Length: 250
Image (tube, rainbow, N blue to C red; front, side, top):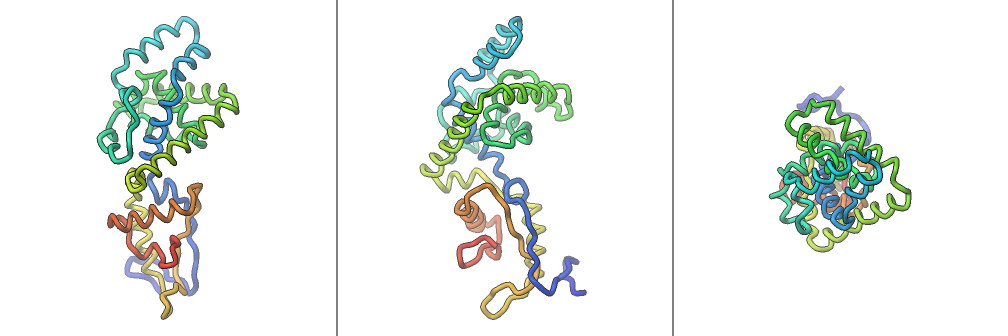
């Protein structure tokens, strides 16, 4: 059995290693936060409408005051944030709270409900930033998220989904490299994939004839997936061996 210097077995044929692109190879969480915060501004008073409709009557005034007087989540009261300016907001509490709750999201419209949960429960949102092990505060935020999700009509969910992707396309059109720059590869994943490249055997035309080859499954379109990888090569975050001359991500 032949091994690389890293101790990785070298197969005698091509073997594909399937992986999710998003969340395993690519960290697009910050981009999702930026897109959602921008798109959320086009849904005025959504949080207040939710509180008035779903909260107990004795809690309404307290909750509304909490939102109106909240100085923590200022990102929602400003103007649209363009990708090239997002770095100054990455450390903000609202972005950190959004990222902490992002694992709840399965579909794009649910990103809006994450913001609703945060704005409805500002104290609990701050609590999980101060103490990531505060299970009680997480439970409150998750319960709110689920309640909004279960109570929202399919029509509104579809409209929110459209708003999310419309904002993403707007940013891509306005400053594509800036949009790409809001994302980054996971360094640990890159290091492991570099080990796989050392199993490759190439023919005289530089085609891989044996070794482990990563293959990605993603809901992203093929074009932006390829562009992200070539952008990472350009920024020296990814080796050129991961992108073929034919314009395909290996």
